[in-house]
Length: 303
Length: 306
Image (cartoon, rainbow over all chains, first blue to last red; front, side, top):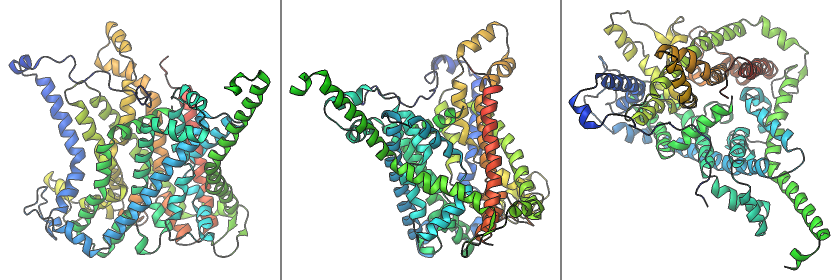
């Protein structure tokens, strides 16, 4: 059943790799200087782009105090993993990590559950007011956080939610409009036969959402999940405003407070940065397809 | 079986109830979104407008002051600086960003062996969390031992104070943002790949060279994507916060005091909530104008492939 399900329409690269290239034997006889130049430029530019990240990694592997050696060296004279061990001791780094993980997990799960449910209703159920409601949902996508920030803060204060994870996570369970939009657009591409077949078998709308549409929406679920994870992991302003006590800090916020206390300890700070980048990297390589699909889809939808 | 055989009258009531059921279920499914919309979007949106006409410190009750927050905004010297800084930052960063994205996408659209690897390589740095990026560039721009000054020294140029220099602080933040430039490359690349090869062939038959293909075929057909990336980029950079908050905290001498940084300070350091709401609404109107502009441009100037 999952075969042949239309994916989010994304322009794929037109040709398979290497199509139309000369066979290797010929290329070997006559070096193609043009092609070598192209590779040199592409590789050079790519390494330049990667340099900041390499510098972060390299600094994190240096001895404490060697971060500001002069002249600077990309490859440390003495490689040590000491910073990665020490960081768990000198700062409540484990606590920050735990908080970030909890908040991100709640946001990812909430976004997926609520957005696919709301998106399902918009995409596949008929009810009065569907189109105007969807338009309203779309229009909130461009509402900047700064506009709603102060009244939202006041509301959370009345509810006693300040300095808890709730202001950061509850919104995700209430159908964030961008994710609703993504899942609605995707679910509209699934054949209506699915629902009709399930209805004939006696399935209700909730069953159709849960057992028919969701299993066929893996790609949009992955896209929403990865977007929500990045937004949450990266979020600085939200934790800054809503969290006060250090035991509730996330990694993004914690790294910064850390910078204040240990301002000279760049090697430790960079080790913390690498540890913060790592999960994003892993997520990227595990779900690369969906990462890019979602990006492109949201981009092209803006036309 | 018996139900299926029953006459059309029975079927109609069954249909009706299925239809009503569908509507009911739909509204229940929409409920989370409705709650979120009312409590976290529309409510705060309207409340923010109302509060912008008040003086309010969040602890006592708001006092109506009419338009005076908006009048104060015009006279506020810091506000003037924040607007200038934000516009300066945006209108240097975004053209550079769009040009770099375009160049990158054109290069990564070539049919070269291993091009997928190159695409990953160019996109990868843009996933760096903003905090990690800001911290790293603070190290790079470190005035005594940072590599930025090492590079200048190698080039025989004088050392700089970078983030601590009034003239260089904004350009330094721009460089910091440019290091994450690959982020919208996939969108541009998809736009490029959406252009049909027939058009290129037709143009080539008409004798168009490489440069002409780019100017007369690629760029016109890419305008929707270019406009999209430009306008969303502008909207995003009007709200630049994290990098400035971490790397310079508005300094030196307010050289990197950006609009939303001032808004944040007014709200959560000075507790001028009414004034901050007025600032937020002014920002909203500007962003709305750019959003409308985006729609207008894409319907007017843009070439669509038909």
